[in-house]
Amino acid sequence: MRVRKFLAHDRLTPSHPGDAELNVNRSLKQIDSADSRHQSKPSKGFDFRRSALGAIGLISLLFFGPARAEDGQQVLGQTILVPVYSHILVNNRDGRGEPGVLLLSSMLTVRNPNLKAGLTLKSAAYYSSEGKLLREFLTVPKPIPPMGATEFFIENRDKEGGTGASFLVVWEAGQPVRPALAESVNAYFFGTQSLAFASPGRVVAQKDAKP
Image (spheres, rainbow, N blue to C red):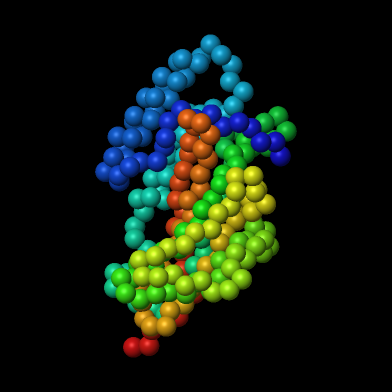
């Protein structure tokens, strides 16, 4: 599968939920301006208008969705599935029927939202789209102090995970605590060209505190 150059002229991540619609309109106006400046030059990259619209919609969906955990919930541990995108399919299919591909770097972050209690991260396993275990990032359990965090990084050039890659995060605590927060940030940055979006984790198993 060929990798094409992705052309971007605007930072797409909104700074505040209330500014989402304004930022979308502003981005589209800047795209129109960029299109008019370059209309006399044939582009070898993607149709950025279509790519930007899809990216803006994806960002809005991921950043402005409803909260996933109940306020005040306390548990003893969880297993969290965090979607990761080592690359995404974009634009139209080429003459061979293959879609455009944009490679991304990905950063997994796991945060401890408790003011006094610590957590222990037991596993951070990276799986491919085919469900193959590619890497276990932890060889020993890793403590996360109160209000602390840790991160793991997948390079832009590492495309082995595919479009459906995932982290499986396992954490435990010695006492009932508020659940850890796990998400990935998937990004492409090259000069003034940029694209970034967050992908929140989903709890797939949980060890509840005894009543």
